[in-house]
Length: 300
Image (tube, one colour):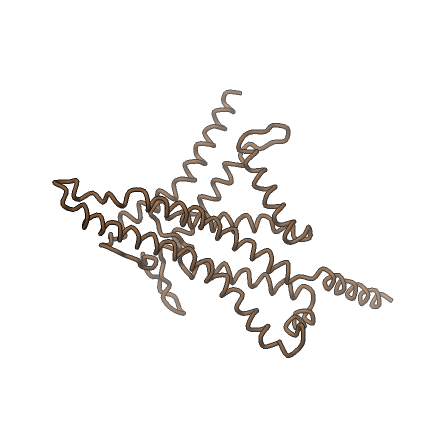
């Protein structure tokens, strides 16, 4: 029994280490490879190296590396939370895991209906990936959500899902959706359809990036003001940016914690609403009935 308990504890420790290890690797990469900036430095993701491809060079950037770090951390955190789960025995981690599952399923059921209950893992993954990516800024790392390429990729994936569920109801239903309420609105509806991934990506990217820019500008401004007003203090005291103490941390709580998690929730909500709105159970059932009738006629 003691051997099993030790083995169980060892796996727990290993999973926790593997959860933290990608983040530690990201901090190490930044310290070793990315040169420190001077003054106000608001740039895009750092390019580590470029791979030659037949189409065009493929840059490997901070956004891609940090995204994979977040994916790995979430994977091992999920394995830790579900390690040792069994019926009839409730541990704290099992309660947390069940709470996440129940809340996500309730969110999907309330916004998409029971027919989309299988979407719960996808929605949970989107929220976790977005929230944890934004929270990387608390560790001094580049948040992938402030890169338009990353959130643009998520939005394109959602756009494919919207189109898929519209086509699930039949090609006629898909084409008819562009002519509602009247055929005159077809060009406007087409532009609106194509604008969906653009709007989703720019909303998420803009809110996260604007928070980073505001935090950097406020920090730089308080540093300059502190040098101006308190630079006359003798010795080391004149070099300490006293006015930077407190306010940047409060801004970080809002922009990094609250706003980052809020944007993850909004992106997940938009995904659910767009996908559920694209699918008509009545049209899908009608399509299935017609297909069944055709099969019955063939048998006769």
